[in-house]
Image (cartoon, rainbow, N blue to C red; front, side):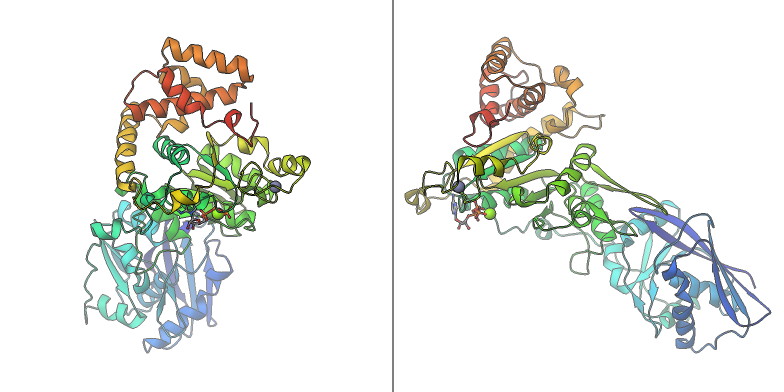
Amino acid sequence: MFAIANSIGLFGMNAFSVTVEAEIEKGRPSFDISGLPDAAVKEARDRVFSALLSVGHPIPANRVLMNLAPANVRKSGTTFDLAMFVALMQALGTLPPRLPDRVFIGELGLNGTLHGIRGVLSMVMMARSLGFREIYVPQENVREASVIDGIEVFGVETAQQLLDHLLELYPMQPAPVWSPTPDEMLDSVLDFSDIRGQEKARTGVELAAAGGHNILLIGSPGAGKSMLANRIPTILPAMTREEMLETSNVYSVAGELSYDRPLITQRPFRAPHHTASAAGLIGGGSIPAPGEVSLAHNGVLFLDELAEFDRSTLDMLRQPLEKREVTISRVAGTAVFPCNIMLVAAMNPCPCGYYGAGLKKCTCTEKQVRAYLNKVSGPMLDRFDLHVDVDPVPIEELSAKEKSESSAAIRERIEKAREIQNQRFAGTSIHCNSMIPDNLLDEYCVMDVASENFMKQLHRRYKLTARAFSRIRRVSRTVADLNGHEIIDRNDVIQASYFRGFYSKYLQDQ
Ligand SMILES: Nc1ncnc2c1ncn2[C@@H]1O[C@H](COP(=O)(O)OP(=O)(O)OP(=O)(O)O)[C@@H](O)[C@H]1O
Ligand SMILES: [Mg+2]
Ligand SMILES: [Zn+2]
């Protein structure tokens, strides 16, 4: 009998519809799969037969043919196991030959139990948009799947359980739609009120967060760079549901969602070690998987000890940062992972770490200091709109009793500034000031005469390159937004220009 069961495949972030066709023909016992299956798909034979035995059915004594349509798209992984099992039960006459409106995804274990798979979130969204009414997923993935409404989600533990349900012997109940409680959405233990002093660095970080600018923190060991960086997610605006789904999709494909964390509800903060490989950072693998830069999507990627990262690995980050997506090409196709991130990096100014700190004497030679800063390439440094010198806070200030301003208070200002940006960029692909392209600077960053004159002075005094110029204009736009100025004034520009290399003890940029 010819039977059809619906499934969903995944390549990169893209889910696609797959139809499993099964037929049993007379001939020597065999099990053939066509439709460009990879090795894992081909091995489904053993898993499907075990599931068959687990429901008390003998292995067919005839030829079993399976075709995964569309036949010209490569299929990988173990996702199709469950649909193949269903199709086989249909072809054998146990189940009706058509089960419309239902779609099956999941990996079978050798005793007919189901194992969790990656990318369920994308697959459920695709199933819904294809108009299916019911989706059957491994129990392990049921919470992640039930984030999506508009389709009934069933968590399956064993092949037997599914069979009993489809035969209407023991019907299962669909999982209730899951949505996070407000508590689950905000539970960071970190807060800006923990940081004493550091007025200038706090302002720099606030500016960066307000305009989505990349920021580089430079300072001696213990100055508080890591402390500032890992509190940045606490001042960014709360995630929209759209953003939660986008980011969760990346985690789903990476296999990083779980029963306890079925949805990413807080902006991610990813801090890969400087020994991270290019594939770990950017993404890769024979079946493309997202890297840290995509796991930070809609959040913060923190590169601590920037100068210790492999220079060529860092340079590979440049394009994704610009395009806000990572493209990985493979024979099977091209995978695209999003990476709309705020890049935060920290580094010491020299090998010993104390150059310019005034606390301890730097023991490096001038040449060593220069060589250290040069470890980060110029084009990479160009990616940072703000450079902030982080000086250690004096002991007396550290032991001060009063708390500093809280993350919630800072976030309020940032949300206001972001709201202005949302209105400004409505209907464009720009989200925040850091994304204003050079050719639109004149349109979006209108300055009054005094600030234009100040820019000219800066230019004469420091021989600024066009790039440095553009960065100051973007950051000035953000300062003006925080100050509620529609037209950028001189003070806005002065404040923005504090965070450029020519004011830095360390970086003499142009
Ligand atoms: N401004 C501050 N307010 C409160 N605590 C601080 C401050 N600065 C530093 N500290 C304390 O010093 C510790 C070290 O700070 P942190 O790890 O952020 O330094 P760092 O600049 O990242 O140093 P390194 O270069 O060694 O990585 C913090 O855990 C914190 O306890
Ligand atoms: Mg640190
Ligand atoms: Zn030194």
